[in-house]
Image (cartoon, rainbow, N blue to C red; front, side):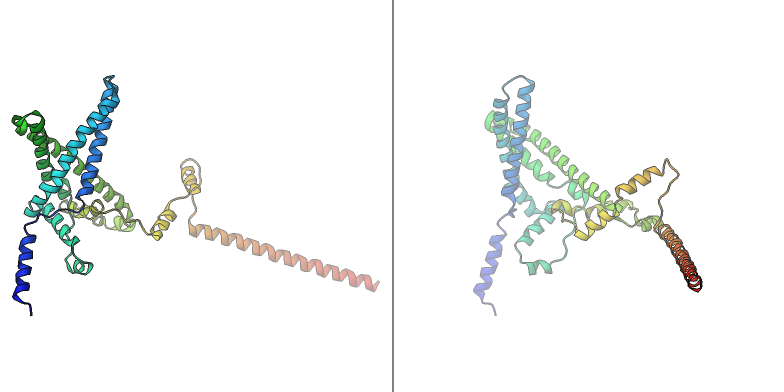
Length: 306
């Protein structure tokens, strides 16, 4: 039986935990990767501009690296530690709800996770709009704050709108690249279906108009988690199904010469015919040896009589 003090403590802990925003534990890594990417982009861009304009590429490279690194640090810090936690707590979109449920599952044990229902697989539409609102708001705040700090407060609104549009376009481009990658994986998995099923039942490989997201969403798990290596048996089967070099040569020669590749049954039948011919020749040799032996015995007998 629980005491009133324990119940009050549990209720107070729940109320205090609800005051904190949900933070992604991978946020420091994401911020570091973002700063590294923007810094590298600045270095390459500055060096390229210096070479094109016949200026000192080293100085321009360092200058743009520092500027873009500061912008990247500001942008990703605001997005990961302010905007995203706020939108996750509000569950603004289905994508935010899914990310929030994943964050809650990270704090559970393996037994508790096993009792939870299966998480819904994100569709292609969710991948297309993933983190778009986060990047748009963070981009607007970053551009407005940096412009107000270096150019004055009057430029906050214009710089914020411009930076928000740029961040949105970049985020949409990255999401579209992910969608293209998922569709490519889906196309690569299509030839693995049995040929007999696709020839006998065309509807087995036909995707209905309303089922496109559902089919490709199964492939979208590769975006959330790394691909698992295939089993060795699968690799061996795939290697065995590939045509060898002599088979490729034979297939190419059949287009120009009156030759064709024998099937396994025809090859076995040819070997059987050769075996029968060899057996027949062996019987003929045995009969010839017997005749020679009989002839030699007859000659010996006639010689002994004489």
